[in-house]
Every structure is written in structure tokens, then in C-alpha cells.
Amino acid sequence: MDMILEPARRMTREDLMYLLNLKDREEIQRLFDRAYQVKVEYVGNKVYFRGLIEFSNICRKDCFYCGIRKSNRNVVRYQINEDEILESARFAYENHYGSIVLQSGERDDAQFIGFVEKIVRAVKELSSNSLGITLSLGEQREETYRRWFLAGAHRYLLRIETSNERLYGRLHPEDHSYRKRIECLKMLYEIGYQVGTGVMIGLPGQTIEDLAEDILFFKKMDIAMVGMGPYLVHKDTPLSSKISDFEVIKERQLELALKMIAVTRIYLRDVNIASTTALQALDPTGREMGLKAGANIIMPNITGTEYRSSYQLYDNKPCLDENASLCRTCLGQRIESVGETIGFDEWGDSPHFRK
Ligand code: 5AD
Ligand code: FES
Image 1: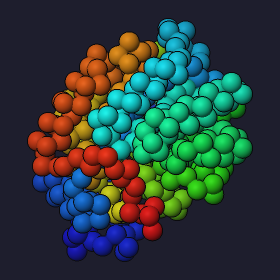
Image 2: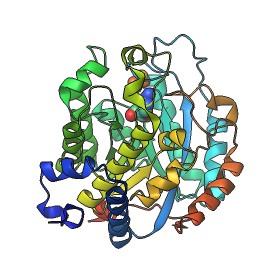
Image 3: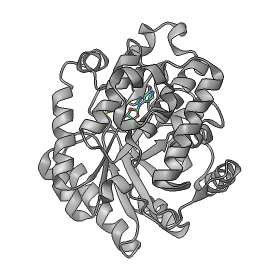
């Protein structure tokens, strides 16, 4: 039996593990080709842009892997003001990006909640309601999620980071709760958001079985969008001191992340899958490789360049000095170079969500 061609509905956890474990170069290439074929069949060969605005690196949390965790004193903290955020949003609108993503460190104070609500309304207004808005602002109360939804946000990204509760526990301080995160994902779903989640790939202590479970988790939660990428070391974090170089060999991290994208595409078929910046950090063409392995979403960074160096979740983040226009030109060429087209002026909802 050829597992790479096996229909998804018949695949078991062991089958997913078998695919994630492929070692032979030719077999891996066949896996990517199959995933690409499934993508073209279910979501087409159009790539959708989400202009990413990282509007603040102030965070109340302390995840052991993340460069902007609150205990990292080596970061200059910033908060971009309303005018500048709207300027970036206008750039996205004028350049026909169908939607934007507002991301920041996690905060849950009243001032922050009100600020986000105001921005969401203003973005809707400046684009005559046409720009789609995704929020990526962490764990919040139900009432907050509702307020932002009513203001006009329609998608929310909240990565589970790993679906293995024990591993989650080792990557976070004690007061960060896996259960709470699951509750948040459920609330978002109930409210009516298109919900995205994802994991980090190649975390210290993570097994292939964990990754297969992650894919089953996406399915169980009826997720519409998946955003995941390789775990990358940030030197000013507790996790960096705990791992050996052996665990984070670049090539291996890249290959594993691409296999994870491919198997997720084959298994879930009609969802949106992002080709993340973290892939590009491992190889300059990492995001194009992601598109060839089944991803269909790219999130060009449109944050003002003066803030980029302060939003480093991991070391060696790419594109720190390319402004949004340069980024657009460079991306357009890269995407066309792999034979894909760009879905300008479209929200690009996944067929899965539309169902
Ligand atoms: N390596 C890779 N991804 C990271 N993230 C945070 N820190 C790192 C890191 N060191 C990811 C998390 C988070 C997203 C915004 O960035 O998955 O959800
Ligand atoms: Fe900010 Fe994890 S460190 S949410």
C-alpha cells in the first residue's frame, strides 16, 4: 500500500506518524507533491495575503520560548499609536491585500481592550468595510472577544503551541493554563469567529507522535485556519539554555516543518494554511517551499520598520529592514516564481469555513 496516496478519511494516527517520519528524499518530495495537488484541488493555487501589523511588544505573559516575554529586560517595549496603525492598514487596502492581522503581546486591561476595539472600527471605516480583520491577541475574556467581534473582526488566531498538555506545562510558567487556552478556542468558535490555531514544530521534548496528535487536534476542534512554524531559539529565553545544538539543526527543523504542513494539508484538505515567517528564518526561500508543500496564505509584515527589531520572538528574524512596499514587490516575484497567483482584494476565507 502506498501511504502517500492513501485517502485522508482512512488515515489513522499511525499513518500520520508514518508520513511525518519519512526520511528518503524522493519519498518526501512525493509527499510535498501530493499535498500540493490536494491544495490545488480543494483551495486552488491562489495565495492570499494578510498584512501583518505587530503593533505592540508589551506582554503580560512569560512563555519560556518567546523573545518578548515579560521577564526579558533586553527588549525595548513599544506601542504603535492609532494613526500609524491606520497608515499601515491603509497601505494594505491600497495595495489590494484582502485583509490584515493585528498582533501584539498579550494584555487584558481595559485601556488595551478599548484601544483594539477602536482600531478595528477605524480600519473597517477607512476601507468601506472591505478589509478583513484577523486578531492575534492571545487569551481574553469572552466579553472581550465579543466586543471585538461586534466591532468587525471576523477571524482570530490563537495557537495551542502544542496539543500535548504535559509538554505545554514544561514550556510555560505554572500560571499559564492549557485548559484556559482550549476554553478560549471554544469561545471564539461559539462567537462565530473563523478560528485559527497552530503549533511550534521541533520543540525540545516534542515527539512525532505529538505532531500527529496536533493534526488530529486541528480536526477535532474543526479549525478553519492553521498557522504553524518551526521552533527557533531566542537567546534571551529560559528555553534556549535548556537545549543542545543537536536539537535545533536548521535543515532538520525546516524539513520537519514542511512535512507537517504537507500532512496537515493532506489530512484536513480545505483549510487555510499559512506559510510562516519562521520558515523564512531557516532558509531565504522557506516560505515558497511552504507554498509548494501545501500552504496557501502569506502574511507580509507591514509594521513600520522602526519597530521590527523589537518584535523578535526568535533570533534571526528575516526582513527586519524591508519596508512594506519592498516587501510587496519581493513577495510578488517570489510567489510567481513558484507558479502561484495572488488573490488580490479577496478575504480568502477557507472553503472549510464557508461550509
Ligand atoms: N520560535 C518560533 N515561534 C515562536 N513563537 C513564539 N516564540 C517562538 C519561537 N521562539 C510563536 C508562538 C506564538 C506566535 C505568535 O509566535 O507560536 O503563538
Ligand atoms: Fe507573550 Fe507568550 S510571552 S504570550
